[in-house]
Image (tube, rainbow over all chains, first blue to last red; front, top):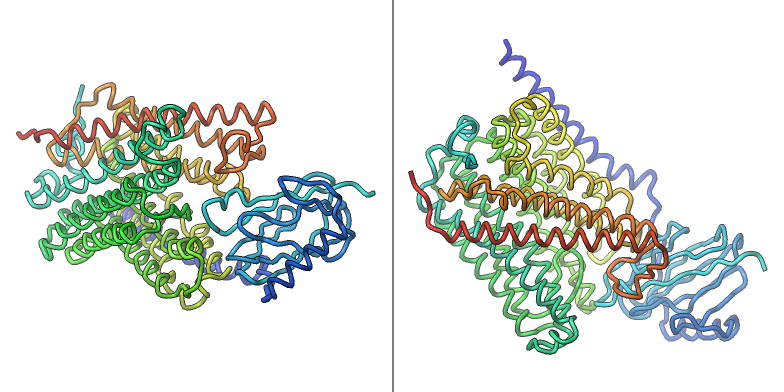
Length: 168
Length: 465
């Protein structure tokens, strides 16, 4: 009787574990379908044209300051072009809390990732393509940007900060 | 002090077939895989010493390598301590499971697999020591971008695949947990190999070499973690048997836990047809496999172990080698698993997670080597103080290392940086990294003791009678 109980319990427990496994397995696509933030669309760009656009943007909105060798820009709300390239995000951003910005991020060389803290964004950008991340910084402080796709030996140093300042 | 002996009491009923010992060809194969496993950690340790020396002001100048050797040595250190060491254990357990099934088909595949794996591992050292090829620190399987390095990895993978195929040819008794666990690990390995090949075929030309390596090893690298988990759970089963004389789970339930692991990796090759290999969905699909697939089986096994410990609490010897290895493995792996759900994008919480789960798996394999494989080969280290001390040193050191890194990461310390780049601007960050450093040192001492003890016994004459 004890053996029978043990065998029956073993069968029931095994069936339960298999069912739980199948449930978790089904949860993967369901999670993707129902709740996960989708990858923003990325589109091909003309690299030279985008680089020129960024330089014009830096000339128009640069503060004259330099951080980690990068010019700092303090743009008004709206579109902000950013270049992702080995191994930097260009230029350095100073944004205002409570304002709405559309970061147009383009990779101008190889496959990079653009993970931005506070925006729940993680773009994957093939070389020569751009994607858009909407950011409304909530409070003064710093938001981390990190390349989320291995892109070479200095990949882990491909990080930057968005400096968020209070209303001017 | 009582020797740890799976062939004697109280574990003989639990181990059944092993009381007859291994036939000589299988014993030779098992010793070969065990030597490759212990040797891989020895090589990894020596490379760690060399890369540390290469960054030491005076000592670095005396070495025959240039300043770039740091990253070259780092790549091969990771490959030996994370890939060769684990795959060699799969090879070893495939021999054990083959013996358990009692089969003798395709015997040549087993030895051929071992020879190829040893050859491939040796080949990895050539570009390393000659400083050939650019180091690529991509995820899972970092490489030196040189044909010999890829050839070495390929031979290693092929060798372990042959050992697994031999096991499949002889697989009898699915209800035997050792056979079921090793078959599950082997099935996951075959899927991982398929993923590597599919990635190689699918990656479009014209990509940067760093992106090629990342996507080449991304899918298969994820699937290999299922292999490692199946091996660890099989190890937990064996260590529990040695420590308590009883299996933690009934056979069908253990089989179901293994099947639940295999279930998740089976669709992995289809991802290469469903999602572009360089795309975002491809990356996410494999991440989800780990997040959803690696939880259930360790939890079921963990609950079974807790119940077993409770039932046998009166007779358990907590300071025995199998019990130390098992208890510390569950603790370190469990904490690492929980850390995995609190990762940041790029701070030291990510390495805190994987160092703890890897440490947990390592503790199981170390316990298996000293308390199971060596006695199976008629080499039985006494439970000396050094043998027992090795486990708390490695386990608690690894735990300190991981907890320190997690605290530092939560405070904002970025990963894979050193010196001023770490931005240690608060007492909390400095204290966390100090705990990390001290834990690392203690773990290295424990790891070195393991390598010394296991190699000494593997190279010694067997004891008979």
